[in-house]
Amino acid sequence: MAEPSGEHVLTGAEREEWCRIGRLRRYRDHSILLREGEKPRQVLLIDSGQIKIATRGSTGREVLLAIRGPGEIVGEIAALDGNEHSATVTAMGEVRAYALTPAEFLDFLHRHPRLSVGLLLLMIRRLREADRQRLEYGVLPVTGRIASRLLHLAERYGEPAADGGVRIALRLTRAELADSVPASPKAVALGLRELYAASVLDSDARHHFVIRDLDALRALASGVTRLT
Image (cartoon, rainbow, N blue to C red):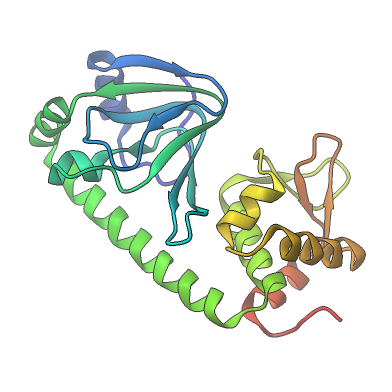
């Protein structure tokens, strides 16, 4: 079983129980785990791999809301309120997950009331983070928004790069980065070019983003400075 990472709320014992009673699901790259607008049929515990959560904006363009990884639960909100999924969950590479039906998930919460509180606190934290991002994206230029997103990803998926800096160990395309900022692909390409030219950002042989100057990226994300 893969080690949990990110915003996981299950204890080790709870995770073992979930995997014991749940059904193993395997998903290939780009497979849809949960679809926006559909009624909930399962709640998933991600065991390995990464998934992206995205929705369609008013213009029909995809907006990347979040990236989740091992140890995290998806589909729980729809299971709790009985409404349709508010976003689509897609595999980013190979993904393993353990599925509970909504009824099984509710039974699981009744057996583990501590988890209900943990999920509530997690939802509150994510709402606060979403509010902060909306504020940032309303005042920051595209380069600052890119910097903010990369810093957030580095906090969760960062690891020391072989030749220095912080490598974001995540398969993230430029199009997905543009969807998460949000900005047009052309504007994001220009912003990335500026970060590369200023030696703030780099990429490795596997096309992962590598942060070379964390202080400069933080200054851009906070709006303290801009690249010229």
